[in-house]
Amino acid sequence: MEKVVGTQCSICQTRYALDEVTYTCPQDGGVLDVVMDVEAIRAATIPEDIFTSPDQSMWRYLPLLPVNDPGHLGTPLRTVGWTPVYNPQRLAAELGMTHLWLKDESSNPSASFKDRASALLVARAAEIGAEVIVTASTGNAGAALAGMAAAAGTKAVIFAPKTAPPAKIAQLLVYGSEVILVDGIYDDAVALAVAAAEEYGWYCRNTGYNPFTAEGKKTAGFEIWEQVIIANKLDRPLNVFVSVGDGNIISGVHKGFKDLYALGWLAHMPHIFGVQSAGSAAIANAFKAGTEVIEPVSADTLADSISVDMPSDGLRALRAATQTGGAYVVVEDQAILSGIASLGKVGIFSEPAAATAFAGLRKALSDGLLSRDEPALVLLTGSGLKDVRAAMQAAGEAPVIAPSLQALKQYFSA
Ligand SMILES: Cc1ncc(COP(=O)(O)O)c(C=O)c1O
Ligand SMILES: [Zn+2]
Image 1 (spheres, protein in one colour):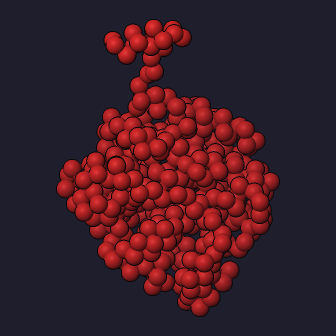
Image 2 (image 1 turned 30 degrees about the horizontal axis):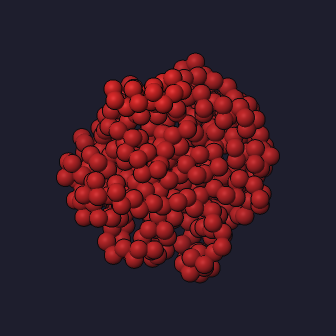
Image 3 (image 1 turned 90 degrees about the horizontal axis):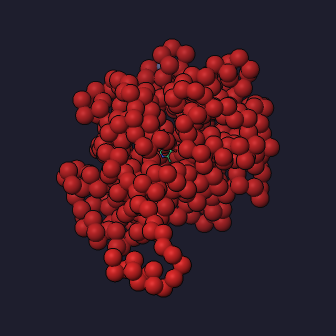
């Protein structure tokens, strides 16, 4: 592939050819970065080619992606990305901010950010002749893979913890993939997916294991660049808030900005802020301790999508903050629920893991990590419909009354 140089280990920096190593570094298990051929891309494409593209999906960035056109026009696979960016004045005023943007990923086909990685993985699988794709998932990555695989007619096998929210499990089943629920935590499902891939010769999409997931996720960085940085002619760094579990979304967004920066298309590298739940804060702990050694935690948070004992992409996720002048912020579950309620009041329905990023912005402002006149964007990674129980916790119960005006008056006067 002429757009790609190969891969490079995030730990020992060893370079590999694309067909030499499929997953992590054979020497130290480090996650591999896909290294793009910046010169070749620059020679073939200028930013205006992208700005004028009629393609309103992540595939508008095909010249910067390590796959060829996957086809499947007219299917959900081709509508992933180019998600809306909002500029909610009331919420900004409430926070005392002058420049606030929210990017809502719930409009993706399976209603979460994860469609970006899965669409790209399905394209990659076809290129290397893989017939079955397997993944472990807290729910969203699995639903995304199941949906994208269904769109392309590819087989998918999904391992998820049996405790995943029912809506996510329902999605997996409806998309027709082979769904196997694991009587264990997410980390157990991860290990089983790797073992099964080896045993049966399946292509493994696991987050923080397959180098191509971050390549799909980097398209969010591209969109933030085009929809916010370029569109608003920002002449200073944007502050980007991302919720973090395994750390692959934040690594992917960072990779997108790094690719643009290497191309010379991005003047100011955004400051990236990772947000974790206090009950699942392995990477934030390392950030606070000033070390790159990430210790596992015993995760316990209502934000199921970011409930991870040992993050699989922790090192790159940590560096997304340390290398950009960002930080890690930790928020309590109660602040996450308040975040769901605040976002709801400006018309956005987020699941707990998405609202976590917003709660992180609030925390960063109150802790003085970010001043209120600095521009900030919050990436809202998944729909509130994914976890209705948490939504009810955030919003409270509705009253039940007799169907009469008298009962209504009584209720209002109570
Ligand atoms: C909605 C949502 N937000 C955030 C995340 C965190 O992404 P990562 O595990 O790559 O850090 C996930 C991962 O499942 C997710 O589904
Ligand atoms: Zn290595």
